[in-house]
Length: 177
Ligand code: HEM
Ligand code: HEM
Image (cartoon, rainbow, N blue to C red; front, side, top):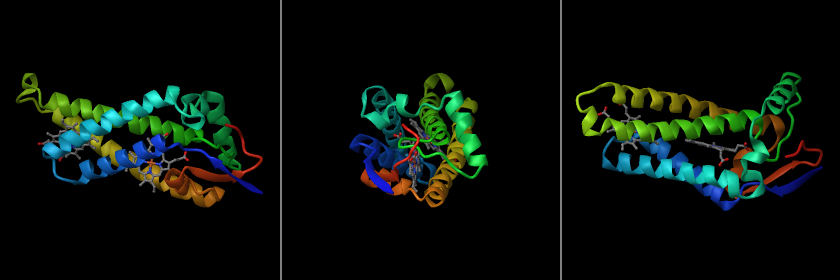
């Protein structure tokens, strides 16, 4: 028996797909003024989403999905037994990845800004850091998308559909939150 549950409010979905679009553009598009403006916009949206993690709707809040030690290891054990626990909000691995992706985007904006300061004119390291962060983000995005598809198939919960519509069909005997 499955029940539709409203999981992601419009702000979570809007920030997710806008940030995803900007990240893809900035990873593979030209590195011009648009790149820089979009990079700052993505960082601003990430900051807004982090604030929303404290004041936003129930499932968007950090309190609903922060990957604490015990949740994290319970979840890993459930994966090892091929019986993945259900979560209405992010599962602990997904939550950890979300935090990681946000930090990488913020660090990219910071290194992009530093790179262009007069104080670092002629220095290579800010640029090298920016490049390495972008490679790390690329790898994490690939893992993130693969995990979203894989877990949707494995648990028969359409996680990607839920990030589009806001609604998730989930088992009634779900593990809250
Ligand atoms: C390309 C850059 C992308 C970035 C930086 C990114 C980042 C994120 C972040 C930070 C979250 C947490 C959302 C929140 O709590 O507000 C998230 C969730 C999610 N993303 Fe992405 N994402 C990207 C692309 C994609 C794509 C292409 C898909 C679909 C194929 C996707 C599917 C999902 C899903 C399904 C969730 C929710 C996972 C869950 O139910 O726990 N993402 N993403
Ligand atoms: C979502 C955030 C961002 C992503 C994913 C991103 C990604 C990238 C990538 C993949 C490159 C090419 C690296 C290379 O060819 O070695 C690059 C270059 C560059 N980025 Fe970003 N970036 C972001 C934000 C920013 C911001 C906020 C700024 C500055 C305000 C910035 C300034 C630059 C500049 C000036 C270059 C050219 C560096 C060069 O000449 O090699 N980026 N960025």
